[in-house]
Image (cartoon, rainbow, N blue to C red; front, side, top):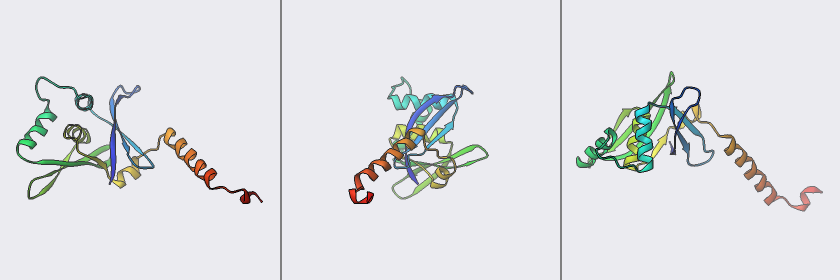
Length: 158
C-alpha cells in the first residue's frame, strides 16, 4: 500500500462530471483520478475547505457516530478497479478488533478527510491505473540530470 494525498476535486470539462484526484506521496508520485457523484464531491470539497455546516452532513454524522461509539477510523484503502468501478475499504478499530468495511472510494475519502486519517492505494491499483503527470516526469528527468552533473569528474571525459 502507498500513502496518498487528496489533491482535490475538479469538474471534467468534457463530461461535466466531478472527479477526485489522489496523488502518491512518495516517488514516482503517481496519481489516480476517479469520477464521483456531485453530492460526494461537494462533501469532500467542504471538508477539505474546513467548511462548518449548521447541521452535520451524512459523512460528518457517520464520523461523529463512530467517535461516540469509541470506534477509531484507522485508514482507508483504495483497493481495485473492476469494469471501470473503483472499490475501497474503510478500516475501523475497536479496543479489541479491527474491521474492514467495503465502500465507495468517494465515501471513504469524504470520511477520511473528516477523520484526518491516512488514505492509501493498493500497489496493484497504482500499477494498473496510476499515472505520472508530465510535471512529475520532467522533475524526475531534471533530478536525474542534476545527480549526473554532481557525480561527474573531469577524468570521465578522457
